Length: 100
Image 1 (tube, helix red, strand yellow):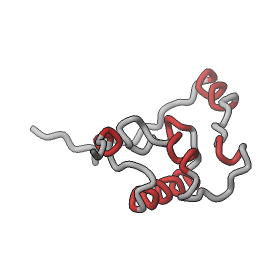
Image 2 (tube, helix red, strand yellow):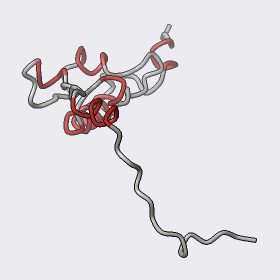
Image 3 (cartoon, one colour):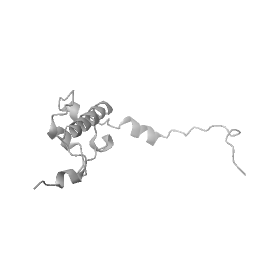
Image 4 (cartoon, one colour):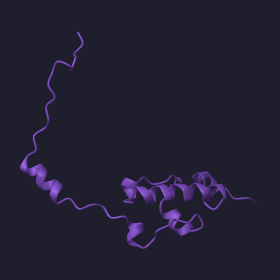
């Protein structure tokens, strides 16, 4: 027997004083790039880009690095462009390989 939710009224969750207080005093995350005065991310700035990739050469998520959405998109574009130009590695194996 399947349940249908069409016959049930929609119930909103009640806001408690504690949940409202948490929402009021929550500090918004500040973007470290904007606070440093960086308005445009450049693909040639390897030091900045390498701080935002992991050891496996993956792009760090914005939740981990506290970067705002606009700067995260610029970082993504710059990292991919730097990888294409061989300024950054695509994976960890690219950095470990040595030519003889």
